[in-house]
Length: 211
Image (cartoon, rainbow, N blue to C red):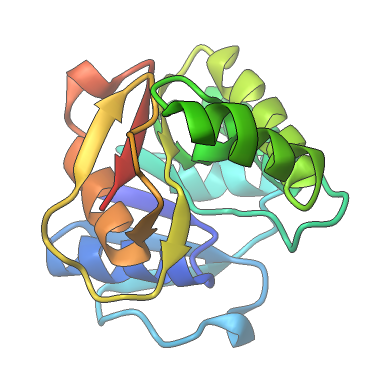
């Protein structure tokens, strides 16, 4: 399948590109600055320089794509709207160009559904009131944009991401978080996203994932 990956220069985006190419997909890796690529994708990935915040520019890039995957994430924990702005731009470009399948990364911080009492009543409220306040707001707005897009979306809600190698096994849940879901490797998150591309049961669903 032809795939387009946004945020391809980040750690999670790099995992997506590498795994997608290894699986035989035809991959377009969209980056704003090619110099930021942490390591070159495997041969077979096409690197395109474009600003994800410019719907007109990226509409041409995604034309003919079977699915779009976004690994665009917040830049630190300060005030910012990178996730929601990129989500809005990608959705607009997809409506112009035709592809309907979209998988995008949010975070488990946005909801308490499925959490245990300590996490939902103590830890996460404190996190949302303090260091993750802006990140949570940005992700929630991004989710609103995607749910209203009219696309065949899947929103991924991982907990803290790690750089560990893929374990090859992970837990998932639909429209709720996972108890004791504290971390997941970026490699396992990427593998899960690629596996969900053709899964119609994941369309219009929020997928939690954790080790």
